[in-house]
Image 1 (cartoon, rainbow, N blue to C red):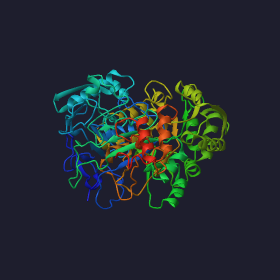
Image 2 (spheres, rainbow, N blue to C red; image 1 turned 45 degrees about the vertical axis):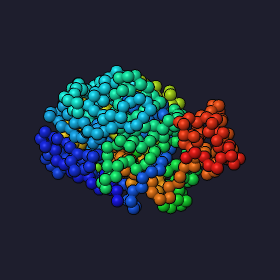
Image 3 (cartoon, one colour; image 1 turned 90 degrees about the vertical axis):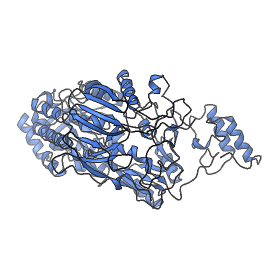
Image 4 (cartoon, rainbow, N blue to C red; image 1 turned 60 degrees about the horizontal axis):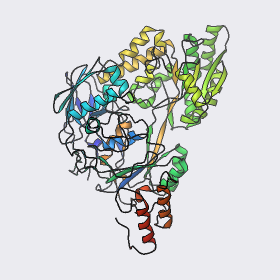
Length: 633
C-alpha cells in the first residue's frame, strides 16, 4: 500500500549550526523542526484522505479555475498560474506558512545556516527535466538553474519575488555545481517562507532565461508533471500537464511518483456551471460557497470528501492615525472594543464557518494570539467604547467618516451592515462614503481617507498584517496605510524585531509580543474575521493533502484516482457523455473564434497531434455516420 508523506513525518532538532536535512523521509525530505532549546512547536493536524486499497496509477485529475491565467511565467504570474506551477517545476525548499515548523525539501536536499544571514542549499541529484518538444535537454537541475532564476528576478520589476530580493537579498553565489549560497543583508525571518512559495518560488530550467525561450504560454520543468500537453493551454481557458517519467520521488512502497498520468485545469467562471460539472463528475473537486452549500451537495453525493481550510484574508477596519480622531489612542481603542467579531462569523458564514481575528489572523496558527487572550485584549464592550469616547471628547459619541467599496468580494457586502450597526451602538456616528472599487482603491492606496472598511489580499505570513501597524505601512512606501509605529518607536522596534530572527520559536514569540505591544497603544488596523474554505472531492480522489496551506500544492504527487473514476471520452467536447455532430460543430466554432473555450476541450484533439481544428471535427463526423468504427485513442 502506498504511504503518504505525513505518515512518515518525523521531527529533527536543529543544532547550534542549524543543519536541516530530509533524513529518513524518502526523497522528498519533509521535515517538521523545532529549535535546539525548549519544547518545540506544535504541529496541528496535517491530514490526507483515508487510504483505501492499493494506489492506482493512471488517469487525469481535473480541477476548475475561475479566471484567466494571465501568463505561464512562474516568475511574474499572480493569477491562477501558482495553482499549476508546483506541478511543473520545483522549489528549493518551502516552509509552510500555516504550520511554520513544517518544511518541504524539493530541489534542495538540505540546507545549512552558518550564520543568521547565510543559507547554503545543497541541490539534490537526479532532479531531471521532463521530456519535451521545446528543445530543453532532459538533464538534472543544478545550482546554476537557481542562480539564473535569481538573476531573472533581479532584472524584472514584475517578479513576484522582487520585493524580497530588492529589500533583503545581498548576494547569490555558487560554491560548487550543487551548492547555492544565499546571503541576506540582515537576519530575515521570512526568507524560507518567501523563496519556496508557489507564487513566485517555482524554478524553471535556466535555458528559458539564458536562451530567451518564451515562457509565457509554454513550460517544462523537473516537477512531477513536468510538461504541458501540446495545444492544451489557453490564456482564457485550461491546461493539461503530463506526468514526468523522470521524476525523482518514490512512494514508501517504492512506486515511482506521481500516480496521475495528467492533471487538468478547466476554466469555469460561474458558480452554477462549476457546481453542475462537479455533480456530473466532469470535474473532480469543487469549492463550495459556504457550509449550507456543502450540506446540499452531500445530500446528492453522500460519499464526497469535504476538506476545510482557512482562508488567509479578511475585511479590516483601517484607521489613519495621522488624521483626527484616529490620532487619539482612546478613539482607536473605542473602535477596538466596538466590534463583536463573533457576530460577524455567526451572521456571515455561520457557526463553525470561521473565527474572529486578532491583529494576525487565526489561519496563521502559532503566529496568532490564542482566543482566550484575544477575549481580553479586544473584548466586545460598547459601554467601554462610549466611555473612551467620553474621556477623549466630553461626549459619549463622535462623528467619523468611513469610505468603503461597493462590492461582494470577500463578503464585504455582508460585513457592512453589521459593522455600521455595531459602530453606531458603540457611539460612532458614521458618515458613509460608498465608492466604486476603482475609486476606493485609489483613495485607499493614496491614504486619502480618515478610515476605511477595507478589502485585503491573501496574507500567508504575519509580516504584512504587522506592517500595517508600521510607520511606512504594509509595503514600506506609505501606500494603503500608515501605522502607529510612526507614533510609538517601541511599536516600530517590536515589528522590526519580529522579522529579524531565523529561529522558529523565537520568531513566533516575537510576532506574538509585537501584537501585544500594539494592543497596548491602540491598533489602527483591525482584521475582523477569517472564514473557512470548503472543498469537495469525489470519493475516487485519494490521498488529498490538507492542512499545510499553499505548501500542499507541492504534495499532490502521491494522490491517485481510485475505483469509480470516470474515463475521458475522446470526441465528447460538449461533456454530455456522448459523441455527436454537436461536438464537431463546437470544434469548428472554436476554431473560427466564436467560442473562446470548449466545455471539455481535453477531449477535442481527436487525432492527438496537439492541435484542435477541422481535422478533429471531420473525424468525429465520420465516426457519427459510421465511417469510422472508433476514434483514435
